[in-house]
Structures are given as C-alpha cells and as structure tokens.
Image 1 (tube, rainbow over the protein chains, first blue to last red):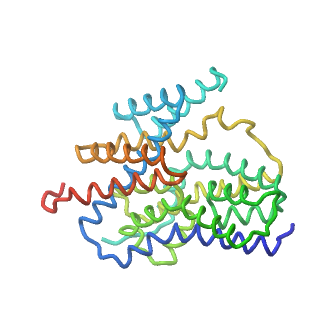
Image 2: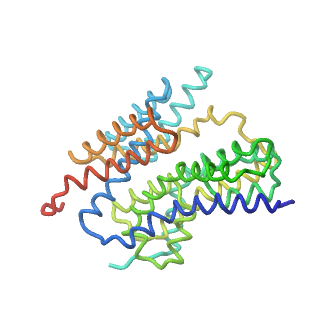
Image 3: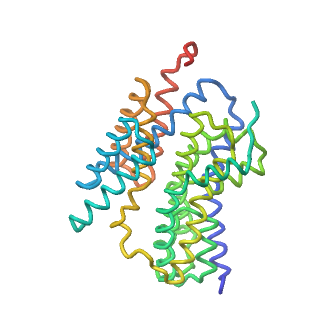
Length: 102
Length: 238
C-alpha cells in the first residue's frame, strides 16, 4: 500500500483542475446578477447538452446504435417513461451487437 | 420559497441515479485494471478516482505517464493539466446552470454536491428541477449513485475482479446516450425546444468533426443557451 509523494502531488493537481471545473461555473454565477433572461438561457442548457451527447454518438453509431435511438425516440414520443425508453434502447444495442458479433 | 436539502431528497436522487451507476461501475473496473497495469498501488488508484472522478481525465493522466513514470517536465505537466481542463470544461456549464437551485443552500452542502457531479446526475437533476423539484439533496443523492460505483469499480478492477469481459456486449457504454435521447425527446414541448435541438445538434456535429474530445458538449450547451438568450422576450411567461 504505497503512496509515492510525486503521485500525490500529481493527483492533487489534476484533482484541483477537475474540481475547479465542477465548482467554477457555480462560483462564477454568484457574481453575475440573476435575471429572468439568464435563467431562461441556463434552463435551455440540459436539452442542448443532451443533444450534444446524442448527435455525435449518432454520427459515429452503427446499425445497433441508430436502431436503438429510433426505438428510444419513438417510445418517448408515445409517452413512455424515460427509464423504460432508455433501457429499451440499451437492450436493443446489446441484442443487436451480440447477434452481429460486434 | 425555501430550498431544502433532505435525506429524503438524497434517497430519491440515489434511486433515480441507479441506471447510470451500473455503467459507471463497469468503467470504474476498466480504469482499475488499467491502473494496475501501470503499477499504481491500490491506494494511489483509489485516491485518484476519489479526487479526480473523471474517466476521460484519468485516462489522459494514465496515457500521459509512459510506463507509469511520474517525472514530468513542467511543459508536459501544464499540457496535461490543460487537457484535463478541456475534458471537464462542460462542468463549468453544469455548475452555472445549477446556481439558481444549489445557490439557495449553504456552501457546505453545495460544494460537496458539486464534487460528486457527473453527466448523468446533472441531466437527471435538471430534468427533475424542470418538473418542480426543489430538494437539493436530490442532486447529491443522484451524484453519489455514480460516484460510489466509480470508487467501488476502481477498487474491484485493481483487485483483479474483471466481472465483465466485454462491456460493449452489454451496451453499458450506451447508457448515458440512451437516457439523453429519451429525456431530450420527452423535454421537447414547443417550437423553442425544437429550435434548441436543431441548433445544438448542428453545432455538436460541427464541433465533433473539427474539435478535440470534450468540445461538442460544451459547444452544444452554449449554443442552446445563446439561442434562448437572443430570442428571449420577457412578457409571455408560461
């Protein structure tokens, strides 16, 4: 159970940078006056970020991923619970990949 | 209206975050296996997962230490830290978006919550907030639902417990993407939302093609926020 001093320094530095990212935006917003306009813009970020996660995945995806995304979006449009839609999509990817031997 | 931070909220967040926890657990194992290969001790690998808690960043560190050597020149070190920053820049946006909610609770509750912030739990929490959630414990509970499996997976992987030979076959790498697709679809309610999807999607694809890893999410998030900022009209509040 060793802990090299060099390692400790490195991990503290990297950890500090990671925490600065996690806390930095939150801290910064303390000094920016709240306004309905700003809050509306911030409320838009989750949807935009989710699209930012899905779009590249779709662009790089093969048949399993694209099929799954179609199933997920279809189920969600029909009003299915988010968890149900998402897990159905994961199942589609798992099954398609195993059949395709990917 | 007050903002509570209760154990009930934490419990609900923890339960809602479980699907993400499964995927994170498997990636924790993968990191643990890698950490053993470059001769991190169990204490070192675990400490890194606790203090850094970022799969992509930890991978960048491991790849930046050839043979596990720790002697980095100052220029190599600053390049590594800049990479870590870019890989985690999206958290700046996540934290900013949490300010109206998490800013209502004391700092000793807000900052530990931010320390365990991840993609899945931020998305889950923001969606829950849009549905009227006020309890800030929800954010920490859903955060811990991924943070704890990350630590547990790291330890297990370092002890050689490779439970899942090929995570791709269980499609766990698709978990976050699947939830994003489902939640994004059910969040689209009007024309503004559709415009956000179109703009964020276009920007993400361009950023994905042109910029390094970490940028597409930041670019899409900023584009969506900017769109709403520009189109904002104070009068009609729904």
